[in-house]
Image (cartoon, rainbow, N blue to C red; front, side, top):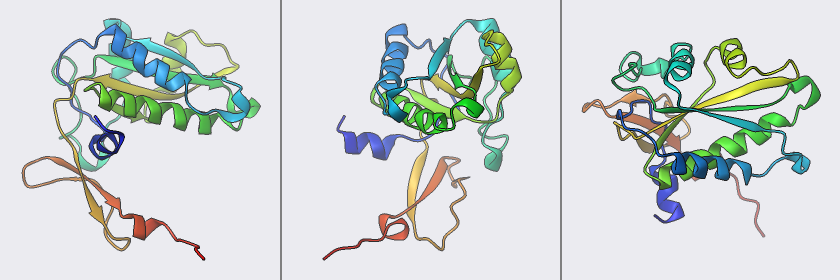
Length: 194
């Protein structure tokens, strides 16, 4: 798949087939994350790929999904839940204010790689941070920044170009397909040219 096609196709996926994600594909996602840009090349992020069912379910039970179209894109355990969570953790923010930039780069790289591999992802910020930290037995100097749901998609969200004055809220179209409005380049960028 061409990179432009990946950018066009990559959308957040919240409903998954109940199909095992191969370990090689998870390793490819982790490889994409570790090769991402990071501040001062400190490489402080670490990753936990969780596929063990008990841990997976505990993390899943503490997550919130797609508030604007709830409950239609809230996965159900055993029916439409992800097969893997990749937990991104790093130094506690008080020691490393730069780390959130690193997290963004790492997660975006994983999302693009996932799309290329036929997988879907959902970058979750609404989850039980303490539960995840305890499950991973992280010490106080570590902080959980993101949980990325990974699996084979059971939906194909689409995007729609919009102007700056249009509503950017995602929604279900008449066919119940998740639609994500995205501002056009002209709406979000200015050019300073000679």
